[in-house]
Image 1 (cartoon, rainbow, N blue to C red):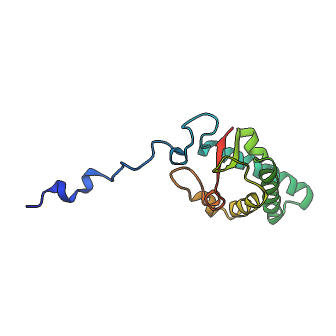
Image 2 (tube, one colour; image 1 turned 180 degrees about the vertical axis):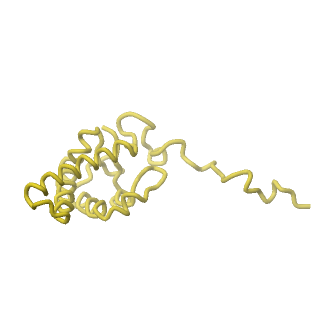
Image 3 (cartoon, helix red, strand yellow; image 1 turned 180 degrees about the horizontal axis):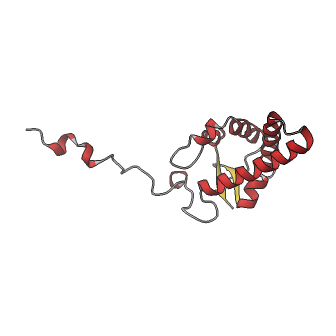
Length: 145
């Protein structure tokens, strides 16, 4: 005879035996402190700071043209993340972009990452490790300093 425990039940819930305890555990990153995954709050404030800077530059130099604002934002992200590993907003919030191996992101991954970030959708679709599709595509991760 078939028993309920043989076939399972929706009451028992999903199998959580393979789920990580915290974001970044599967990547070998610490749970908190330097080197841990940057949480959503820091990311959102950082992108708001960067967008505000791009908006100020665009208002001054391009009469507030929305495409110019997006272009200034993309250039800021590509140049600063590609050379320093962080944008102005990232630096203020104490986070930076690294490759999964631990090295700097580099110019080409930073350029592609910033273009994908400007599309918005890749940035808002993320995995359990809080990595957006733009980070997954470039094998990067945003971590705390």
